[in-house]
Length: 151
Image (cartoon, one colour):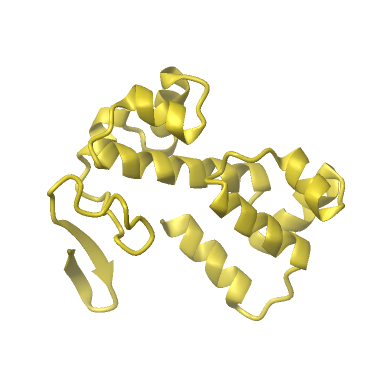
C-alpha cells in the first residue's frame, strides 16, 4: 500500500521519530486499523491530543487517518480476493456494509464492487500471503524498472 510505504520510509529515514509514535504505527498495522486512538494513547502513556500532535508532526498524517487507510487497504485486498462486501465489512471492522461503501467511495471514488476488479489493485504476496493467488488473476505491480507481473 502506498501510504504504508511512505510512512514506513519516514520511520526509517533517519528522522527522529518518538518511540511512542513508532509503536503506535506498528500497532495500527498489526491491528489492521481497528484500534482506537484513545487506546493507543493509553498504551504509550500519552494523552490522545499529544499522540495526535506528535504522530502528525512526525509522520504527516493523523493516527485516525492512518488507521482508516490501513483498514481500507485490508478491506480492498479482501474484496479483490473475491470476498463479499458484507463479510469484508464485518472482518475489517466497519460498522456495516454501508460504512465500508462510504469509505471505499471516499478513498477511491469507486464502489466496493468496482474496487474488487480494479486493475490497479495488485495483491502483494509478501504483505498479504494468505490472499495471494486466491482470485487466480495475475496482477501487475510497479517495480524500479517499470511493470512486472505479480505471481
